Image (cartoon, rainbow, N blue to C red):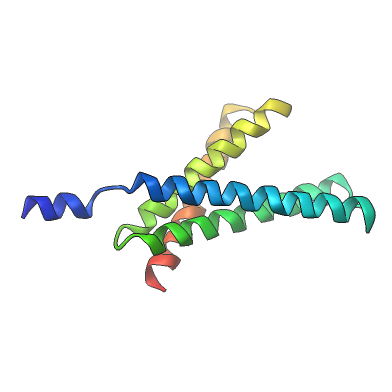
Length: 127
């Protein structure tokens, strides 16, 4: 009885790693496409480009939360939330290289990543 209960509460790290890696690959691909379009076809202002990148990141977090939940049988919100949190922390670490941010900004973005990933996980486990 306890083995089955413990089995249901476990977190699948392999799935979380795979979907976070998938999210990073999708982001790189979309960034290259946006850079090509921005360079050759139309010019974007910095504010517009930042808004597009933020929206893209949130859509990617929803997708990785969705895919993480689809791969597990239960606790989709947990897997989606952890995937979103890890993805956002990686993006924050990459961003800190170029722009220093405050701890409150890091905490806010981490919480948003956790929340949006959990929403993606809830959607993924139910559909």
